[in-house]
Image (tube, rainbow, N blue to C red; front, side, top):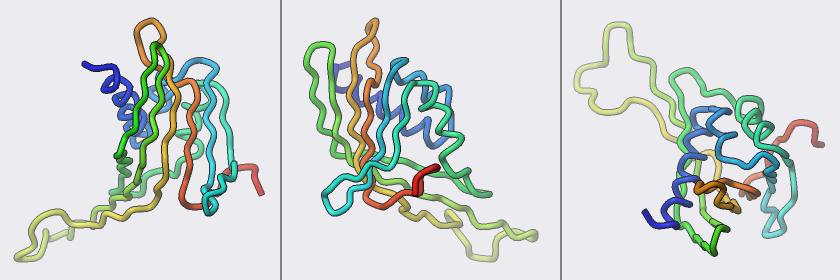
Length: 161
């Protein structure tokens, strides 16, 4: 597998850990002293809204900062248009992302009505922006050292006005 693909898979594991709200899987993607910074892209002028320091804190934030999934609901973080640079044991990605909220309809007690077919529910885009992680190869494995999240929408972040 190419180095670029290995780097891209770290981001794929990241979005799955977020969707699953899996703090342990998230922490495992970061070096011990990693930093994650969250920005709101205020008309092209990034405004910092939060920062997390340390792999453990970043993993813990998945459960504490992310809204729980609603009943019959799920989220899907998708990434696309990856710009990947690998230089020796250092790498960067600049990827666009969209988060979709998926909520299934309640199945009627007597079953779905006659003629109803296919998925029942809604899929709604709820968040977008850019993921810009910096990575380092550590003992043959790519790990995130610094992660910048640039959101297209403002974010309510705990302990900020």
